[in-house]
Length: 181
Image (cartoon, rainbow, N blue to C red):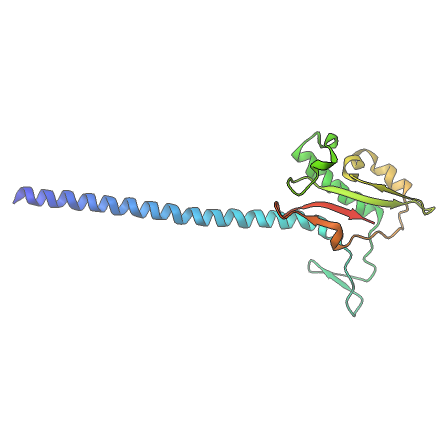
């Protein structure tokens, strides 16, 4: 009788141990799902924050009141891009690219694509005399030539950037190319 009681206690202990172990495994897998969802949300938020730096340059069509609403802000009908805005966008791309690879300026053009996190800025700039020059990969030269660009090109020219000029990667979810005209 005493051996039977001990046997029942041992069996009960083993069953409780199995239940605790099963509970631990179930808790582990449910937390993994939560952690994965949280990481995905954080990545989406980071991509949205990154993309907003470039999407704010898209020219929107004004509503019937003559205002443009973008990102919760209302802009007058004179929402115009200047050379300073292009230099700012190129500087943002430069900072992003240099964080990824300090020697990014020597990268071939084909490496700027939707498969990686580099950002390419293209611009057709206009001088006060009306001459234009197309500069692909403006982000490669902006760090050294920003002052020259600001002095050489017309500060009053109104540049355009439409939604079709901003390319967002289907792979990374981030802007990888923006073009100003």
